[in-house]
Amino acid sequence: MAGTSSTERGSWNSKLGFILAAAGSAVGLGNIWAFPTKVATEGGGAYLLVYLVCTFLIGFPVMVAELAIGRKSGKNPVGAFKSLSSNKFFPLVGLWGVICGVMILSFYTVIAGWAFGYAFEEIFFYFGWDAGANWLTDTSNGFRNAIIAAVFMIGTIKIIVGGVSDGIEKATKTMMPLLIGIIIIMIGYVMTQPGATEGVREYLLPDFSKITTGLIFSAMGQAFFSLSLGMGALITYGSYLNKKENIPQAAAMVTLADVGIAFLAGLLIIPAMYVAKNAGIEIFVGDQLASSTDLVFQILPALFHSIGGAAGLILGVVFFLLLSIAALTSTISLLEVPVSFVIDEYKVPRKKASWGVGLGVLVVSTIVAFNTSLIGTFDYIFSNLGLPIGGLLTCIFVAFVWKTDSAITEMEYGFAGIRQTLFSKVWPMFIYVICPLAILYNIITNFI
Ligand code: PFF
Image (cartoon, rainbow, N blue to C red; front, side):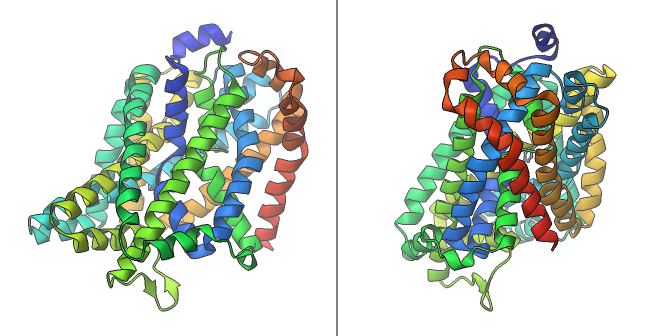
């Protein structure tokens, strides 16, 4: 069954293509914009440590579960839950994922639009076109937000229309290596600047007294968001995965790529903040660090401007283009979830589904563009709460409805000896007990 449906629906051309597309989904604003800021504002090295624990102990097992569900069913999140059991509740979990995807995408494109606008701002600034530069950086200008978000969304739709291997796989295959290369070059530059070591210390030395329930909740939400878990993005990407591929290994590679880039982004941005401070740029408001929007969208441009000349211009343009590319590979996966749902469940051709859903999301984006205070609310409901809840219900589904043993049978394709490995003994324990309890505990303590 999966064979026929995967040829009709499209599939990845190569293992590397899948890894890069899934890593492209994972790596985005969450890594380069949100993660370094959360590290900086919520506990430095202590946050990094808790984040790593959440990623490997909660995120990775859930990712394996999502990929197995996706590949076995060969369907979008709603169709996947429907096809693996007759239980009427779980397709609603898939639907919740589709809704989270739409809502996250609606604000994600607005922030991605800011990043894209700033790349041009650097050029305008360099040539002294102040009016244009100011227009591009005015994040409170709803009209400007809406226009750039629309440009971004149309780019995303066009890639999705191209389909799985020609659109998504091809786009991410070139963008991901470029992204990693540019980050490394920029770290090299920032490290040579005065003030950088103070930032490195702040980033890497944990102060355990900073670990609180609030910090753990935030780090867990961040881990889900960053790994693109809990809303069926990896069920969808898994549905295009070939039976030859080794699911735990692919999940490990995607997790490592995501953590690796988040780590590198922290190593770039936190020292860059301290370089900026050293150069006399205000990074603290009172004793509080500037807000996340300010950090990346004000302090870094100020740093680029203070470097000045062609070097400042190139670094600024490249950094914001890189952020836009990272965001684009994530918006692709955010849009692919509702699009695959419409294609599978309503038999709509890909092109029509992509434009229909994409333009529908754009309407919500436009509302967000004019009311940016909605970003925080949507982020809280659909990312911080929505994704861990989706992850929790996915674990419950695999543990008690589909059964971990069926998932392991699915993983035997591409990993013949899996039943003899420690993984096959330990992973079910995580899905039955550790992940659900950790997620539940976190959500409850946060409310208390
Ligand atoms: N993982 C992306 C990021 O870190 O920016 C955001 C994201 C993409 C979340 C896709 C969820 C998703 F399904």
